[in-house]
Image (cartoon, rainbow, N blue to C red; front, top):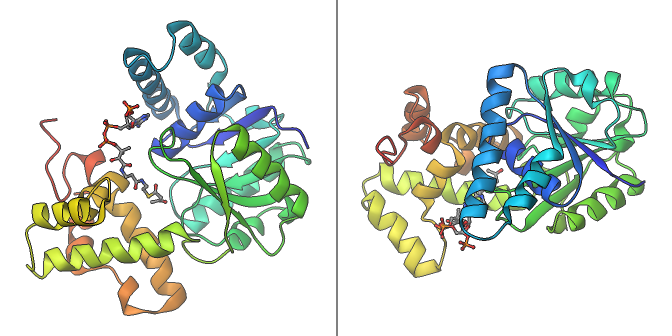
Length: 285
Ligand code: CAA
């Protein structure tokens, strides 16, 4: 199946990034958000990111206009009806995702693929909210989407080979390298990454080293682009806690339990960069 039109549900950090990459690759993109205010601020993220690319000389101004002309926004899922694929990038909660997929299944043309950008939730559990389990698949991007070269393809037990082939071809056109992962919590990257981030938070919580030293140790000693506490702030502490909870429920292993410090920080609204404060203070940046 040939994909020309890409629908996206959710215009947060991930949805906006996927929209930008898809429009840059020449696809027509329709983004759906719950209300006009959130849609406007989501679209503004794309504008800002493209403007930065122009400023850095990575994108011509005329190309920016061209890319933006391929992106439309809506607050009505009905407007996604003709998309060849819809990629969902909403909050990491099974009930929320199932409600979105049930609605998409109702309004989007029957031959279209419905993909989820979930980072930890079972694709099978999402797929059963629809009548087209063979066309539901995980397509997991990484933040920042325009920079990170990977996409994980996650078929469930119900997904057809045709769907896997179609999203693999799409990922390639988006300039991403794909890996195929089983429908298990966290797939490949988060299964490994989140355990590491939780451990780094425990190291900090137990007072074994300062936050700066923990981050510098992994940056300079293991050549990571960001230390684990900076990366946690970047991903969002609420996201990490939510993903850890999914792992803990599935595996029951203490290493996936949320460290008390993480739980307290999320309760206090210290979510990382997006809230202005996490392990570090971003309010003055
Ligand atoms: N959009 C587009 N380009 C961006 C960008 C964005 N949001 N953020 C940074 N860039 C580009 C910059 O323009 C710059 O490009 P040039 O080198 O060509 O000028 C390049 O990326 C490097 O950026 P900076 O110099 O500003 O900053 P940096 O060197 O510190 O890099 C970073 C920033 C790319 C984010 C880097 O720190 C990094 O790779 N960090 C790790 C990110 C990571 O691990 N992401 C995965 C998170 S896990 C996840 O997403 C899965 C999940 O489900 C939780």
